[in-house]
Amino acid sequence: MSFRIEKKILINNLNLFDFKKKIFSLGVKPLFEKRKVQSLYFDNSFQKMYDDSIEGLAPRKKIRVRNYPEKSNDTFKLETKISSIEGRYKTTKKISKNYFEKIKDNGYFDDKYGICKPLLNVIYEREYFKKDNIRITIDTNIEYNLYNNKFSKRDKNIIVELKTSKNQDIDDLFEQFPFQEIRFSKYCNGIDLFNIN
Image 1 (spheres, rainbow, N blue to C red):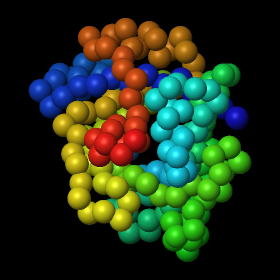
Image 2: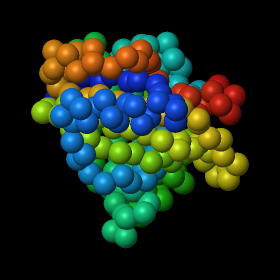
Image 3: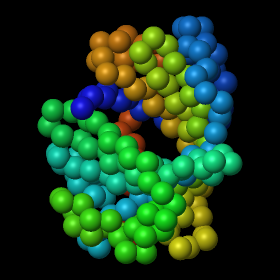
């Protein structure tokens, strides 16, 4: 198990160019091509994962199935993001399309939250960058819709994440940016936008 350190920054279209200019001046390099990401989040009937995240409780989880819809050989990954007292980490397991359809219909059983059903779909475009052991992602055109509901809501914000396993390295880089760190969850933000909590 590898614990991760994450810091998030909220920016907008007006300062996106300046932000990229800044990271390139610091020696940050592109890692992958920009791609569309889709995540379907699961929760139990009491939306306990949402509540735990809002309250900042530990341990807590978020369960989602992630895929990349524009890829011809699209694969599905069942991911569990865990925030514990010791730190944060993520487990990832490739699943078949058939299994994905099964848990969408019947739910997914989690030992902490019980039966969890699909609740919120999030689609966005992600750019990937890297400097040494620090990864930087920039998420734009974020769109939310409730499961089995085509009505969607867009997020005008742009979310930047800095991720690493070494705390000191990320602090040194983070201090180079004139932006404030935020606490942000796409899942919680989407639930709030639809006002279903």
